[in-house]
Length: 109
Length: 116
Figure 1 (spheres, chains in turn cyan, green):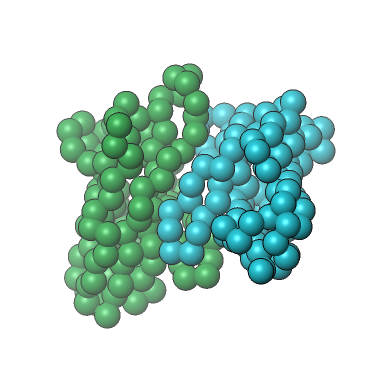
Figure 2: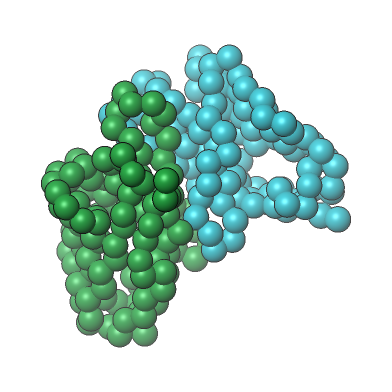
């Protein structure tokens, strides 16, 4: 089993749609969790950290379920500019960052 | 506060030559990570360094690849005798010392290596 797994994608959704990405991790000792986005031929950029209580940033909501070792990202009212690959990142103890393979999102006009 | 800097942004080498990729972390960051991304593939961890120490090199190919992060100057990823399969984007990321604020990684713009 891979350390971090994500929905295979791609997701093709119309503008305005709500889309959810799922991520699971295998290391129960993982300490912190993040979502990054990566545009084509660009570097990954931090989208948001994921906290146990869940957190929201505008149209983006992230949730963490430690018991199930599961992280989610919800995007509401999708924009064309949301088209990108979304990377789930898990950090174990000692700065060991593990990236998931990514889920590609295409928001269509 | 300048972000993570990488140079060169683009590098072209012929088979058998050496490639040197440089990464300057964000100010105050003492951890550097190198990743490789092949076209249409995900990020693959290569190596994690702190100043003058290699902490985890489990993702580094056993031959031809080496990395360093000297006391002074940028981190260097060195690829000797490059082959066509080394063509990829190489990203560097940095993070602050553990326990100092967030443990988030910040990425540089990457170096795109093309081997002819």
